[in-house]
Image (cartoon, rainbow, N blue to C red):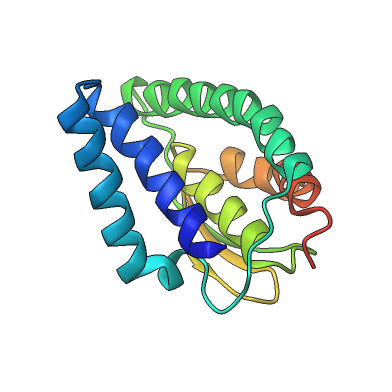
Length: 160
């Protein structure tokens, strides 16, 4: 199952990025996706047979606009901090503890934090602890509220 899922993901990604719909490009995409998937499917889904959950997929789709909005707000905050005459930048490291237990939830939260300008996930532990660097205390305290963690937990859902 992981081989097929990896091939499908790679094929879709190839088609989206290339933008080509000629038969030679589609055949190249299929052959390349199958070949690379054969070699690397264990890297994307290590050691487990991954179930494709429609419920989890729709939760992720619902999460995406919220994350994009957070990225936009964080961009505005970073621009403000860098253009302000007094540059209110106060680098801050903080440790966040969550109840995320699966690789999916931990990876989703770590990537979401890093995608949001002004914050970077420095370490992500399997027990749900994260070490995060923030440009200032405001963005750091926003992470402590737990909204992003709760949304990632909802996506993690039934994947135990």
